[in-house]
Image 1 (tube, helix red, strand yellow):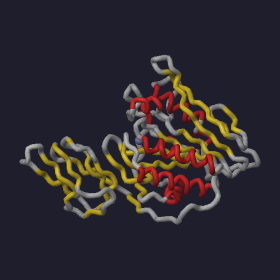
Image 2 (cartoon, protein in one colour):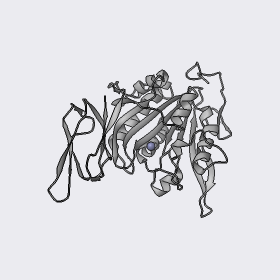
Image 3 (cartoon, protein in one colour):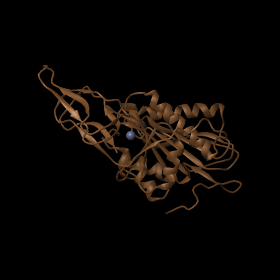
Image 4 (cartoon, protein in one colour):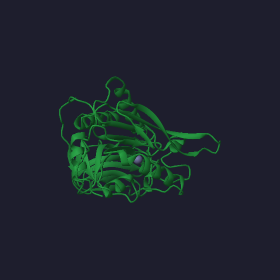
Length: 325
Ligand SMILES: [Zn+2]
């Protein structure tokens, strides 16, 4: 379904329905998304925080912790909720899910306890795996009310992502919003099957995927860029009035390739994330522990580094640098 009007600027009182509840103008509430209990019989609630202003306007969803160990996004949403405490929403509705994959967050793991990646099970089903049920609950009971979703991620394992927004080719509306977000980079990336991005793209709905920092770590640079971008989007959509700062401008990456380890060993990156490099430039070294082997890792083409593996030890074939052009 293609929606022609980007955001419903609405009649005097549009219906905002989240998890089966009608949220009234001026209401602030925390709803609980419940899908499964832990094996200790403890019920698991996934808090969904909703702030609706008196004035109708767009509904913005901030989604973090789809991958349970990507804590930068969780802290970013926490900061926005903190801001909303002193700077209330003036128009529209803010919906925030700081920790979606609570099961993964409890274990500090990307996946759910059965090893499934939640972001490969959309739109999900009510009778499927835990991943599928969580995806279904979000897709059916939250997302239909939402005009724009901002989904916050970090690099998996030790891969440190330079803060960027990923966009889907031909999604002009989201690209325009990505420019408002004003992260240092916008990266065109292929859509992963059965991800939230694929589902929303097929429905013609606006979506921004932010990537910054790495899993299991709080990276203040990445959090600062995400927090600033979300603030700018909220001001752009009218949730907040005023403008916080000037646009810094963003570079566009339309294609990329991983530079992989040709050898196993201790890994010594030599180029800063975000560097512009030319073909043949030495990006890092892989050494053995005995002082006998030192192999250079070279740039296969001219481009910009936007992800650097920070693992101290790598195996042959591991992704070391993500190089965009
Ligand atoms: Zn992620």
